Every structure is written in C-alpha cells, then in structure tokens.
Image (cartoon, rainbow, N blue to C red; front, side, top):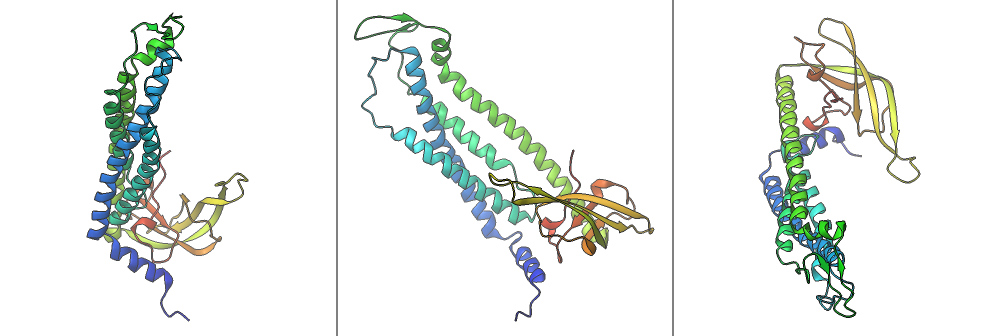
Length: 288
C-alpha cells in the first residue's frame, strides 16, 4: 500500500521539472531539429512541385530527369513526419519548462520557416522549360502553345516559396499574439497565487464532449461548471473547458482562485479540477 498521496507526488514532480535546464536544452535541440527537418520537407515539396511544373510546361515526351531516383521527394516525406515530431517535442518541452497548460505556437513558425527556405533552394535548381511559351514535343514535333496553367506553373519557382513565406508570416503573427496572451495570463496567475483568494468549489454540472475516433464515442474533453462564494459571501459560478473527463458532480470537487478586489472580473478567475494543482492545472476563462 502506497503511503504517498499521488496528487501531492504529481505536484512535486511537475514543480521539480519546471524551469529545469534539461528541458530548456531539449527545447533548443528540438527547435533546431524542427528547422532542419522543415528544410528537408521543403526540398521534398519543391521537388514535388517541380514535377507538376514540368508536366505543365513541357511535352509528355520530355524525358529529362526521368532517370534520376526520387531521393529528394522521398526524403521530404520523412522530413515532414520528422518535423512534426520535433515540433511536438519542442512545444512539450517548453510547456513543461514554463509550467503552463497551453503550448507555445513558435514550433509551427520554425517548421514553416525551414520549409520556406527548403522550397526556395529547391526552386533554384529546377529544370528550365525547353521553350518559354511552348510545350515542345521532341519526338513527334507537335508543339503546343502554353495555356493558363502552364504559365501559372512556369512561375511556380516564385509563388511556391512566396506562398510558404506568407503562411510563415501569418503563423508568426499568431504566435506573437498567443505568446502575449499567455504571458498576460501567466502574470495574472502568479499574482493571484500570492495575493488572491483560494477557496474550494462545488461541481454543479459536467458536459462531456465525444470524439477522437471514427465512431465518435470516446470522451475527449468536458465543460465543467462550478459554484463558490466570493470573499463577501456572494454565490458565483464559473464554467471552464477541460481535458479532464473523469469528473463527478458534488461538493468540494474543484478549487477556485480569484482576485477578492475584483471578484466579478472573469479573466481573474481560475479553476482547478485536481487536488494539489500545479500552475498548468489552473484553467483561465475562455476567449470567445
């Protein structure tokens, strides 16, 4: 029989890893791997795009490059999966290092940036068309003028990298906004952990959300409503979305942390559904 409270042991373990230099080092290594593997994925995407470009601007009888093995495209496929894995590890390491519930958005920016560079490098080595404006038939000499798609793919060496660059900039803008929002929540939580009012709360409603597989019968999340008295004794309610699925309705099933000077301010109300919660367990108000 275990004599250690599992909730307390979990709390101490997560707090011990928060701010650990090994997690920071792992995040740096995984981030570098994300960029490099993203570049490999970009090279593969560029090779794949070149095949469509060649089919659009040249005749089917143009056999240049047919004897070359598709190492770049195959390598790019492995690069995509490796990039996703590295980005996931980088995000998880930073989340554990910061002790936050929401992961950072920057790994997606790194992956897209690497892919943009890889695609741009690949585009510089694409085979030129046999003749600009004409699909040359070197066998039967039935040449055809280019149409809309041929001209579109002729400039793919420019719009392909530009498209990925645009996606990278959009992801960067989202990552910056998400980072600022998460930093504000983290500052509010830190202030409330030292100056706020912490009180047990009753779980009064649990709505389970199904999904996660083809049958859609697996519980993947829940929406929980809790009630609690504020510092003045006024009964209040708070609703939060959580990944916790094994919850029961009843008294004392949650904790609420809020600012006693501003009890009605929703963004200053945090809900925890675990005993001995760590920082990542405190659920902020959702942004609708």
